[in-house]
Amino acid sequence: MIKTLWTEFNVLKDVTLLEKFSKQFRVTFPTKYLELAKAGIEEPFEKQLVMTKKGNERVIDNFVSFNEDTYSIFDVTDWIHDDVGFANLIPFASDPFGNYFCFDKSTNPMKIVWWFHETDDIEEISDDFDQFIASLYNLPHNS
Image (cartoon, one colour):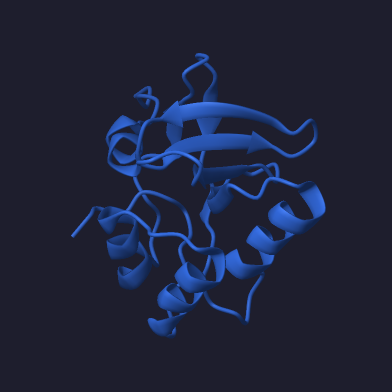
């Protein structure tokens, strides 16, 4: 199992939601992502920072939930696709400021990008989800 990393990841209430989402949005998720989504995370992840390929540090706050009783991945994806116009982005995590970490399904394998909701800027982070997970870090604590 993958060690937990973010501050919140709601426990998946119905595993069929993964398949429902995949069919509805025509996406095949990477194995590591599915492992995280199926496991559900209830405690803080240890690593919350990632560097974009432009050299900008980004902080990960929450994993976007599949559970339909919350503002779910279904809702966020509909918003990004229909209202914003980025049909190739699949959000999976957010930062504390309303921006999203997304799969870019226009690439194979799907690249990981960060989408800034105020300007619609997109910054590439990694070539795939495995690389994304491997690149996460925290700043050292001063004792």
